[in-house]
Structure formats: structure tokens, C-alpha cells
Image (tube, rainbow, N blue to C red; front, side, top):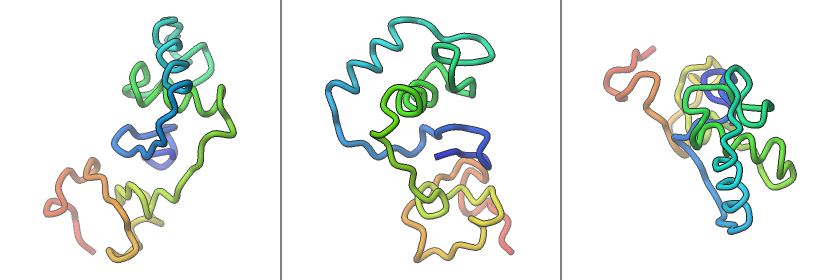
Length: 113
């Protein structure tokens, strides 16, 4: 899922995976190819973001361009809620499965409304 209001393709702070040896081997091959291009990311297609050379770039590249049918996006307000976008700020605690304290760092530092 896109973090920071959609400016990132994937936030490495939250991943749910079903292990697949072939997918892993494919991603290792992508990394070993070294084809990460300035301004455009892996193989010139994806993920020029913070951490793009690592998990935050190679995983979205792989599932957006190599294994398109093998991924599923979840609601980012329910899973990995960072309360940085307006629609996620209205979610109540019992409906949020996981929080990611990156925007306000710690819940006791967040501004309450």
C-alpha cells in the first residue's frame, strides 16, 4: 500500500507475506542485477523513494511489474495506520488492526483532536 498519502509505493514498516521461495529468488536476482536507476528505480520502472534500493523499492517493483497477480492491497487506515491522511485520522482504535508510529513517532507525541 502507498504510504504518506500515496507518495510511496510501499512502506517497509508493514509487510504481511506468505513465503514463496521462487519469489524470493527472483527478488534476489533483481537486487544482484544492480539495475537501480537514479530517478526511476528498479529496471527503470519503479520505486525511486527513500529506501528504494532496499525492501521499500524491490518488493513493490516485483509485485507491480513481475508478479502482478500475486499481491493484495489492504486498507491502509486499518493496517499500518500512520494517521497522516485525513481519512485515517477518523478511524477509532477498535477498528485499527495495526499502527505505524512514523509520522508522530510515539502516540503520546501526537496531537489529539
